[in-house]
Image (cartoon, rainbow, N blue to C red; front, side, top):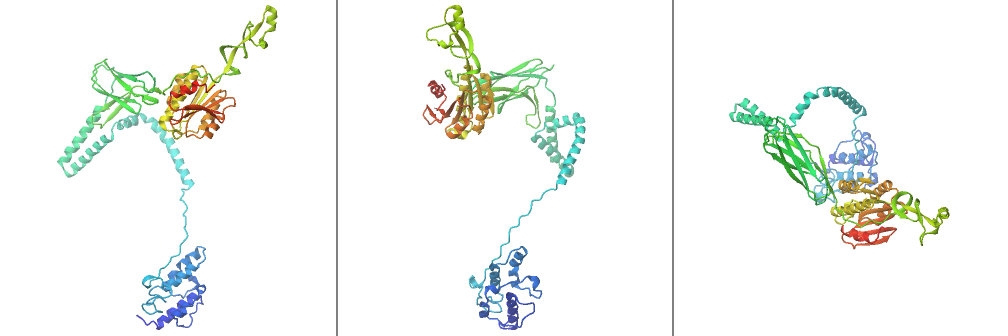
Length: 556
């Protein structure tokens, strides 16, 4: 170790002082530095020169402290007091000038920059660099366009070749599709065991290879062949209500001139599938099986197509052939019988003529004798003078009766969610059926399904196809208004959590003279009828309550 007061110390301290004060490049005369002199240096005099302005500067531990300022200078940022203080603290670190054990301080003492560090060691604070965001790498447009052009040219050339060679590769692909994942595994295991047995002369592996390959070929042989059969499926009835029984029948007839081995027939029924193992059938004989279709929920159940399955019991190879088309079974929602609505009978010039006689309308029917109480305005004076007695005109009613029903199928607006939505659909279906029985035009909007001026079975089919999910009730009411511009009654079936202002805005899309009704499904509320905001609000808890609220003449 050198003497703290030796020449090395003086020269090192002189260079450091000249650097900190920003002196000229010429080295000044040696000046002896003490702790007291160093402590009197102000922070404003600590200015760091760039490295290119100090060609003769010695690279020491203090040069690393200016790295932050140098990077900030290159990045366009001005050095701050933090950078100056970091230089001072770096000088005070152990082994440096002014630090413990350094040339300008006796061993075991701490400099001005390291007095706050435990054990005499200073904490160096690195300056923060700015975040640099790299641009996203993009493929040049020329490359993408060239690739698309090559694909188009290749496709145009390959497509005619593929169409001409389809009779060759199509059966091959169809045959490969017979093999299941388990079958390919057994085949690959047999090939691998065969290769290892031939190379290492391992008898056991050869036996495994033969067993796997023979099993695979035997399963393929079982799948080859064509069954000559005729399959018929019937579902009776094709329209049922939720909970009603529905049965189906499948009949298989052997059309070949020889006997047929036992055959497996699969018939998809909704989300499940019915499987029938047919016995051996002689030539021309037939076999019949019955099955039950579940109807616990509203919807459309797809029955079929019936397929025969050829393959092995292990499931290595499976070949299916379709024999029938799909049959739809409609499960209609529950409905309740209602009294005639008696609403929406608005007399209109363009309305439909009804067989009901009237004394004041637009469709003239006949003349009849005057009766006490008849309006004298309808006396036909010319006919009266001709026949010598009072005759009055008689008319036929022309009425515009059109019911528009909108169902809110958003589960979150109901108490009970899906079950409450099904109740809302049942109420809407009951209203639509009653309206059709009253010979009124009916328009229904239920989720993504719309139907207008149709029969009762087709309207119920629409309810059966409707899904449950969120909808825009304002847009749904707008669709109903467009389908039924001549509507006389508009009903919105919704839940108790739908804001009233949304219901009011939705029904406001209909004409002013239209009777607007909001049918609210709420199992916790009291059944009743009330009026608010120009709307008639009906509240029901179950399907049977609908008859009660309508009996009070709420739609009149």
